[in-house]
Image 1 (cartoon, rainbow, N blue to C red):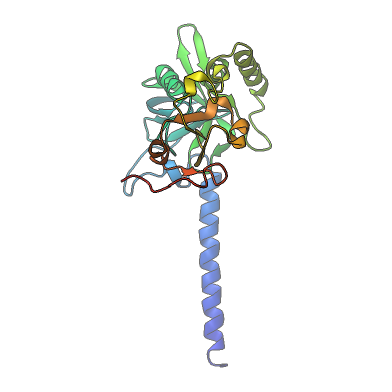
Image 2: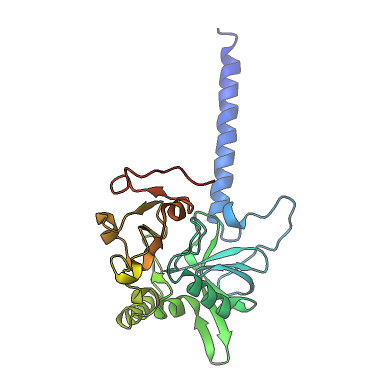
Length: 258
């Protein structure tokens, strides 16, 4: 046993050094705003992209993914700071109410345009996307994308982390309050459950939810009207990839159609 002890100690030290090096590299790449740490902004193997982005710089937008996410000419994905637009089907097949409208509005403002980015306090999110506010120059001045979406009711304000987006917090709250008061966009969507117009819909789900419910389910009262999706048949609800509610749909046949 004593003969193998030096070898065992050497092996353990080697493993420790390797793990420490890997941790140091991961920490360095996640901490540097110009070096994406995986996720959406990781270029393909062998690709050579100019990934340098500085706060206040101007960059061209080539593609809009949804209301709050777009892609720069260098391939970097940018997530808007301070707002959250309705989903358009990245996680489920059907878009949330006003999701398509929010996407169309962001395309109108940004796609093919040069935007000025202001990086957030934490410049990368957990998916490796840049987190920034976006401003596009027009003849009448710079247009703040996030404030525009909030004022038009196409996004809700969202502050992440203890520092949040303190610089623009008050402006965004004012814009959202104006949209709420005037029932614009998502704030004008009323609950369709139980209305005559919704009589043909026998199942309902939250736009981001993994479960669907019957109209009488108490859980539906806890879901914002702007986030509700209706389905006429069980097959239609199952086709979205969702599962039936374990309370109101426990006796349903849940074999998914081929």
